[in-house]
Every structure is written in structure tokens, then in C-alpha cells.
Image (tube, rainbow over all chains, first blue to last red; front, side, top):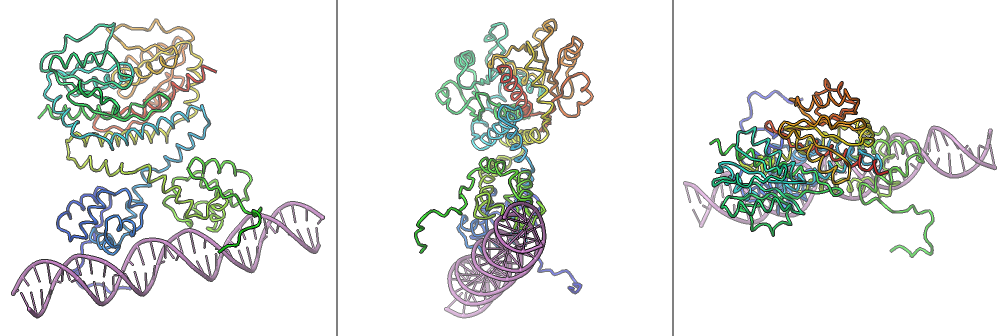
Length: 282
Length: 282
DNA sequence: TAGCACATGGAACGTTCGTTCCAAGTGCTC
DNA sequence: GAGCACTTGGAACGAACGTTCCATGTGCTA
């Protein structure tokens, strides 16, 4: 039974261990720059490999950071934890929450039998998830920034996307309308062109995936010739199309059996729309 | 130095440890039914909680299954592993592959600063991923089966979805066309109705999310009155709409700032389309 | 019913890993 | 240049955990 302390120990380090990953990250940035050499190495390595902590031992993480295990232990204590085990608990809990029974459920759906509808759902969900991860991993932030800049200066934003890409274009049309951004969807109804609607000061978002739609490319070329900025939303192998656009945004859609979930393309398009709307208002 | 065995030991159990999660699952179903009581308990528990293995100790898994740790050890060896540690390695590797640096990347995108376009991408990707997981978790397989059955019997499939739901409907139209399934997209161009296209033997897929589109509901009611099967694709709170459909499929779309990624709805719609096409061919 | 083969559970063992402690090293200040 | 405070790295300790072994229990067969 510990004796009651007469006064708070002034030497006691503050025991505010981060309770969430975000709090952990905040603490990391707070400490940045005011740490001894070895401890700073720990911080840098962990900041860049946060996802490995849940499944690694101290020795492994320390080796990755190029420091002895004892230095990593110090670091954990400076972060507010009692030790590595407590810090690891935070990441393990986050990891197990992110996949509560999702993996099992997917497996059960797949096990429903080939051809069973639920198997298809599992496959498409998996494809969609991978596409999302690929988007987050491979996103070209510079190109995205440039696209936002170009579009936020535009008077009217033209949207072109046919066949497989039409859902993306039409959703952009809906979102821009909701956000109060002037946009025009080139829907190709009745074979009527809307090319003459392209006016100086406008910009075009052209969405097309292999095999590329002739109508979309023709419209992009047309806009280019008129000197309008063209933002191209397409898949990675389309670098040969780079010449006809001012800015190329690529998304890697994982497909399952010839069909794509479009989830990555829509997520990117949505982000673009919201960012453009935000910048126009300022 | 072990002596060279004159003959293969017949008592030696086959050492073909599963190398993938799928192989593991196959082995699990192979063994099902021909296992002693306690070992069967292990198999059952693990089949339903496969995602917990990577982060649990033998003792924890054994307690979950209601068996002593030694029984769990036996089970691991019967599955072909040298022990629990080796089995756990399989699941840990699968887990670390599924999140290579994705989580870190997302964090970095978010750290780009509020209002920065890449932050938006991170948020939408996260929302999309959660929606996908929710779909896998909450999918009503019975309803999906029923929907496939109803639609595979239909002569022509009508598609209704306006405003926010229009991208889903238009993608369904594209996919059905690709698959050779007769489908008609009610696009509402020029305010022209296509109600008279609803003929006996047809079926309707109505897609609408709160706030529900009047046109879609009106079309669904109309189809219902004519005795056509109606499949409703909507969000969970819409149980009050249940009465106007023969089959209700719900998707929980996590939204970020008023906009939804639609990824779960599209994944479900795609699955529905492919399953219907497959069943019609047989 | 006796015998045998197999299943079962607990206790003991050995390894791995987190943690602590102390001696050596480094850089700064007076 | 001496002293001091802080940092550093390795070795030793202790706990947690995987693993094995053996005594006991159970069910089937002759």
C-alpha cells in the first residue's frame, strides 16, 4: 500500500499518453525539433512507418530507425507511455477496430459459392477498397493542386465523359450544381454537340478510361485548340494522352471481371469539385 | 546430425501448411466434421474470428473457443503448422500487406492542411472505405438473392434514379448493355416520361436516397400498380418505403460534408447486374 | 469386462521480448 | 581546461508467451 504523497512530485513527468492516433501524431509534431539526435531518429522513422508498429517488436522498429532498442524505449516514455508495450497497444487497437469482422465477413460472402450474388459483392467491395488505397497511395498532389487552380479561375466548367465514364461526369454535374459552381454536362443526347458552348474563360474536365472515347478526346482537342484549360481524368497508362491536357489526374481502378467500381474516380472527382468550390468562394 | 532415414516415415503427418488465407480456409472446410470435439471447437471459433488471430495470444484464442491452450496448439499442428506462432505469422503477413503504407499515406494527406485538396481526397477515400465495409457487413443476402431472381425473369429491366442517384442508374444502364441484358434508363430528358414503356413482364430497379426523389417514387408506385416487380435500392432509414417494393436493398453510405462517394451503392448495383446476367444465361 | 487407442487438460520448460540499469561518451559552460 | 549535465549503448533482468510432455479420462473393440 503506497503512502499518500504529501505533495505532488514536481519531478513527475506529465502522464498524458495519447489516446488516439491523431493525438499521437500531434504529439509527434510538437516534439519535432526539440529532441536529441537519437530520439529524433525514432520520431522520424515512426512518423513514416506508423503502420508497422502494431506488428513489430521494439528490436525491429529500433533497427529500422537505426537506433538501439533502449533509445526506442526512451522515446516511448517521452511520448507519455509507460513503455513500448503500451504504445503498441494503441496501434493494435486501432488496427483491430479498422477490421472488426470485416475480413471474416468478406470471407463468408466469398464462401457463399461461385456465382452466388454475395460472392460478387465481396469481390467488388474488395476491388473498390484496393482502388481507394491505390488512389491514396499514388495521388499526384501537385497535379491536383494545379487542376484546382485552373478550374477555380474558370467561368464555366464543362464536363465530358461518355459510356463508362458518364456516371462520374454526371455526378460531377450534380455536385457542382449543389455547390453553386457553373458547370455544363456534355451528355451527347440525340447526338447533338455542345461544342459551341465552349467559350473563352471556360475550362474542361474530360474523363475517359481505356479504351478511350473518341467523343471525349475530340472535345478535349477542340477545347485545347480554343486555348481553354483541359483537365484530364484517366488511368495511368494514358500518358500518351498527356499532350492534349494541361493537367492529367490518374486513378488506378482495380477491376473485377471487366467491370470497375469507379469508386476511386468518383472520390477524386468529388474532392476536385469541393476544392474548386472552396477556392472560388474566397 | 540426423541419420538418413532408410524409408519415409509413414507416421509423418503431411507438412503442407497453408500459405495463404484462402488455402487456410479450404483446409478448414476439409477438416470440418472429422475432428474430435475440442479440435472442432477450435475450428469453429477460428472460422468465425479469423481476423482476431493476428493480434491475439494462444491463451486468448483458446479462451474464446472455450478450450485449453494445449488443444489450440494441437489444432495448429493438425492444420499443418509447427505451432501457433507459425500460424499467426500467416495472418500477420496478410494484415500488414493489406495496409502497406496506406494508413500513413492517408495521414500525410490529411496533414496537408485543412482545405487543401489532398485532405479532401483522404476524407473521401476514408468515407468510401467505410461505406464498403458497411456494405460487406450489413448486406442482406436473402434480399439480394430475391432481387436477382426477380430481375432474371424480367423481359426488360427499367432503371430509375435521379439527381444524386443518377450516376448509379446510368452505370447500371452501361453495364446491362455490355452484358446483353435488355435495360431501359429512365433519364427524364426534357421532362418526357417513359412510363408507357413499362410492360407486363418487365421489372424496375428504383434507386433513391434521402431526401427521396418524387419522380423515382412515382415511377415505382406506377410499376407496382401495374403488377411489375420493384427492386428498391436505398439507404437504411427508408423502411417506410418498404411497402412500395417487392425487395429492398439497403446500403449505408458514409458521407463526408454532405457528399457521398456512392461507392457502396455502385458496388452493390454492379453485383446485382452481373448476377442477373449470369442467371439469365443459364 | 478387459484392453487399447485416442482425446484431454494441466503443469513445467524454454524462448522471446520488453524493460531497466549503469557505465561510458559527448558537448556545453564557467 | 575542468566540471557538469545530458545523451548514448549494451548487458542483465524479469515477465509473458509458445511449446512440450505426461498423467488422466473416455469411448470403442474383442
